[in-house]
Length: 293
Image (cartoon, rainbow, N blue to C red; front, side, top):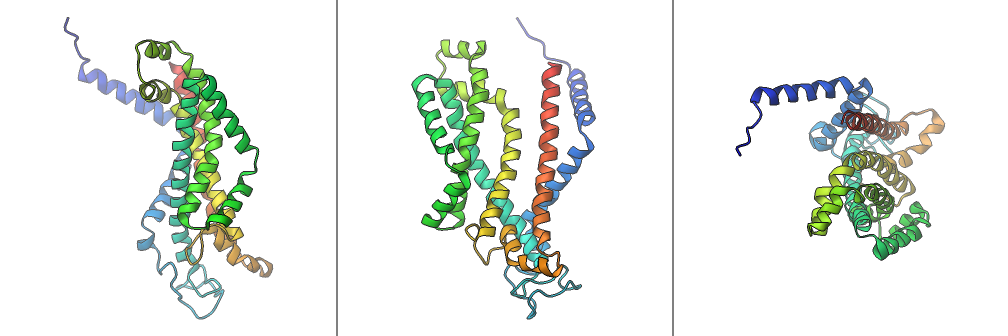
């Protein structure tokens, strides 16, 4: 029997309806969050073109110089342009945080889904190991490990990525358990499908909205973690620009009524707010789609 395909006009109407629903459910706060993320992404990618000076370039012999037309946000303790370092700090902080978050999700999601699909002894063993790791304070473990292996960018990404994978493991396992009991997963097992097939074709697509929302939240947490480590002197090392270290280097200016230390802190806060706005909207949008179906 020949199956007739849908008329192109029908597909066009369906696409238009989907776009209309998407736009109707997109809140002003979501657009604001998207604008913030887009702006930060542009600054991070084109930092070398946007910044008026180099990342480590000394532009003044005066430490903690005033805000002028040549140094828009003044200079730091070495005479480097704060505005330029703020821009390069966006590239370094966001780039390292994104890499660490991706490692967190690759490890946590793959192990979490595998534990849920296999079940039994494998699930119990993996869950107990994760519980034992989570019993230790995450920030303390990272600090100890960095003091042992050194505070290089590579070590920072790997350690934060692996440390955060325990939380993602528990989330991925929890939502996957609700999917593995569904009939279509049992049918795949009866057909003799491989573990890889079940994970990527049956389980992962059905838990993706939850994981996407968690990715945004986890990214914000990683940004804060890296900034905290840099503030303590164990994160991104000088002379590389980083928002956390910039707060530490100019912290004494607060006593003199100078707002310079608040600039990198505000950059962190605004990024976190923008990502949270988008995540909050995405959860409501995904919930609305489930209700429609």
